[in-house]
Length: 219
Ligand code: AP5
Image (cartoon, helix red, strand yellow):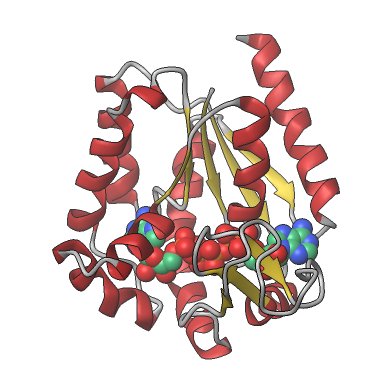
């Protein structure tokens, strides 16, 4: 299956992607994680992306699209993919249509996670991620067993620099102005599916499974 997962900052894209990737056996491709890895390693791409990310702004399409095109050509995408956080602008969406047609893997479904702003604020400020393996926790909703220590690998937990209420406002403006038109793009193609992601994580994943299982049966 060729899946996109969309939604505002803190909607649960990363959390759901881990579940989807494992159950449906598709590689999880997160442009946010790819950029963070580049920033951590001080690559030329990371140095360019860093200032945008720390300001909560979208990284320019020219830096994102080639990175995704390269990634989609890897062998593990031969049976499908799960794109998390891409596309986020109409330019990215139209480029993705071209890229996926080149590899004969057009997008099957765009999962759109909807959550109220007050819930997003609570999720963003309470999120902690593992410096080492990227596992996602939350101080209240999904705490690690030992405070500050990752349950998966024992690594140190940290707060992302862009996880502040101030940056969330900028990220939400970017979402409204640049990403909502992308949702309409997929609605017009009849492949946008909306999910109430304000529910507990197990319920959100149950709703996603209904959508994906129906899609799988129809293929
Ligand atoms: P990115 O890393 O993609 O950030 P984002 O879209 O802002 O999304 P988040 O990672 O903040 O949230 P999420 O939806 O994954 O939520 P999570 O599952 O962690 O991008 C970062 C930056 O990179 C961008 O701002 C931009 O600069 C750049 N970038 C990336 N892609 C780009 C692109 N295509 N074009 C241009 N620039 C790009 O969950 C959040 C918290 O809530 C966690 O603590 C979790 O435990 C908790 N939680 C999750 N689900 C639930 C639930 N159902 N109930 C209770 N708690 C929950």
